[in-house]
Every structure is written in C-alpha cells, then in structure tokens.
Amino acid sequence: MGIHCEYVRLSLAKLQRSLSDPSWAQDHIDELGDAWAEEDSLPPEKAPYFSIEKSWHKLHHLIAAHGGMPVDVIHGGAELPLEDDMDYGPARYLTPEDVARASGCLATTPFDELARHYDLAAMRSAEIYLLPESETGVPSDLDTLRHRYEELARFFSTVATAGDGVVLVLA
Image 1: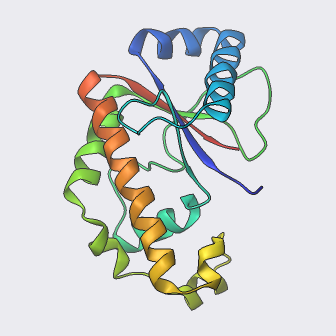
Image 2: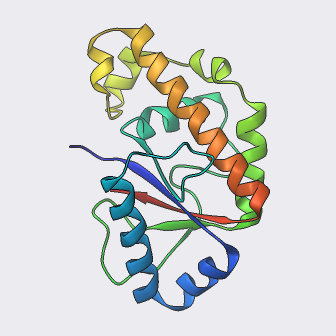
Image 3: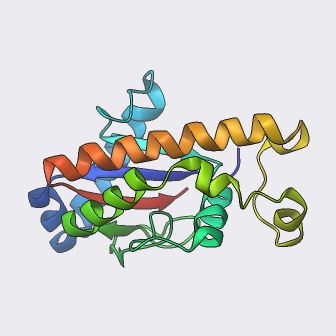
C-alpha cells in the first residue's frame, strides 16, 4: 500500500468550519476520501479530493533541491485539528492565499527544471520513499513524477482560481 499524499479542496466557509469543528472536519474529509476511493478518479481540475499517491516524497525532494517554493505543497501549512490522529503526522491546511502563491509557483516552474535534480543514488542514500518505477529505470520514474507534478499544478490552479483552501494529508 504505502504512504500517499492526498489533498482535500475546501471552500473558505468549509475550511473555517473545519477549524472550529474538528468532528465535522474529520467526517467531511473521510466522506470525500471514501467517495474518491470508490469511484473512478476525476481529473484534478474537477476533484474535491486528489492524490499524488506515492510520488510525494520524490517530488518534495526535487522541489527542495530546486530551491523550494514559497509554500510547501507537501508538508506545509498549519496543523488542522481533527478528532482522530492521522497515520503519518497531522493533517495540515493551506489558506486560499497560500494556495494562490503555491499555484503561481507551480505554474511557472516547469517539471524539466525539477528533473535536473533527479539523482536516484542520492535519493536512495537520503532514504527518499521510492516508487516501484525507480527499479525499472529513470525514464519511467521521471514520466510518473512529471505526470503527478503536472496534475498537482492543475489541481492547485483550479483551487486557486476558485479562492478555495486545501487540506494536506499523508495517509
């Protein structure tokens, strides 16, 4: 199974409710996650719940090696109190302002700039969470990372345009 990085899109009103009502937030996030798991996934532009799956750690490594972003789209934001503890750290949230800044950076940072920092041996030695594609070769691994990065950029662009916030979860 492994660790996945998942994103929940919330309107500003739902984000504010989540901050004041951890029980509601937990239920709402769980409902969206369950619906996402049971259905064919929607494209990032239409998804209320989105996952970059197991590529999160490598993308975080590539983004950091490139110099980072004004908003950390993997581990950033403030802690969102929920009723239940998450498996791999607390849920975190990005405000609509954070989402807009992240979206701008994702939109202006082509994946090819990140790919220049791809070094599988260095990632292994840094104990970066590897994808199964890592064993089959660099081209397929980079293709997977490119695909996930481009989906992430589209998701953030749509969320930013709507003025919504995002909850980040490692699950």
